[in-house]
Image (cartoon, rainbow, N blue to C red):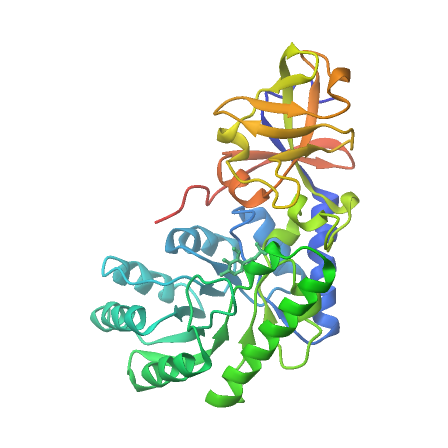
Length: 361
Ligand SMILES: Cc1ncc(COP(=O)(O)O)c(C=O)c1O
């Protein structure tokens, strides 16, 4: 049935997408935890609207450009979970504030908070601020409880800020192997966040954010909101045998490709390479993607427009055959596509524009 579609094309199973969105929302609702989904994964207004319709409290974006697009989803609250410092952002932040009920920004280090204070002051803005806490990823955020305390003190002293709470992105949990070590990371992240809040202000909310931890974090004491993104579609990182938090049958996005050549019996070339799958690979199996029908066939290497597929069942692939591939990491794959083809009940039903694709400014 996909013979009429040009390839590579992203296919989104809307029934599964809706089920994934509802499942995460119901889990959060059951624990009285707010859900603030990160739109980085889908970048589509249609998906944001589904998230809001079932109860998402607000949306999380990294870049201002994403938030500017996401305004049209009907979201009233947006958290920009990114270290903003650029004076050019002042007027754009002001325009966003005027069209939302709440725009929250992030303070992630002393230097960044000083720069952001200048941006807000010259734009005449006073905004709520989440203090970023590094819980092990080693990206942005206060590196220790003491550093978080001084960052929060700085935020409280600035007339352009109001201290709104604390956030982290515990993405290092993707590097853990067995479920036992993921649990250890989750416990350590939780403990760090609780200590930060206890030292600064026990009444303020704490927001971790990651699809691999959300189901656990949402149920933990003292967690007020979670901010997963990848859960809407899933990918190999979330169904990996090590710590599966989704089932294979929950996967809602696949990449439809055509077998372009069979230069050797043990190698087939797909018409999607890094310009479709990106250079991201799974950490455990080191592949860009795996066949959705679960044949033992993997995209093990990519050049720009070629996906090198290998595995025990490659010999069964025919030149011209359409195959569906589950990407290793879905978020950057979506960002490379202009639109997705939407399946309802297995039938092609619509195309949705990836409205915020490429909005990295
Ligand atoms: C700041 C922030 N919050 C939330 C998320 C969502 O995490 P995940 O991709 O595990 O759903 C990310 C992902 O990169 C992030 O950077």
